[in-house]
Length: 123
Ligand SMILES: [Mg+2]
Image (tube, rainbow, N blue to C red):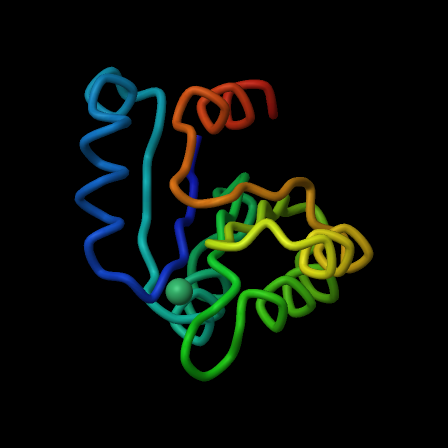
């Protein structure tokens, strides 16, 4: 299962790799990282898109936001599930995420137990 994590904070990669170490080692999970919405769009367009099952995207990023990425994915790769991540659980962002077609919304700091459930219940 391939998951694309999108966040402008570079240290999220280490955090996710550490928290999902067991699953990655067991070959259950393949994580890719993009550090901007643009980079994520390039990855999605280049890689066989069917190979990615879930995109986990930060909302607040310089340049294009996570909402721009969500719109792009909903228009062009409608089979991809997108979960939005934000430091703020404000209702406006949550409503916007769900009206734009996000499959979920997580507030930072991420509860990795909940995230694991979300990822492994997608199948
Ligand atoms: Mg950010």
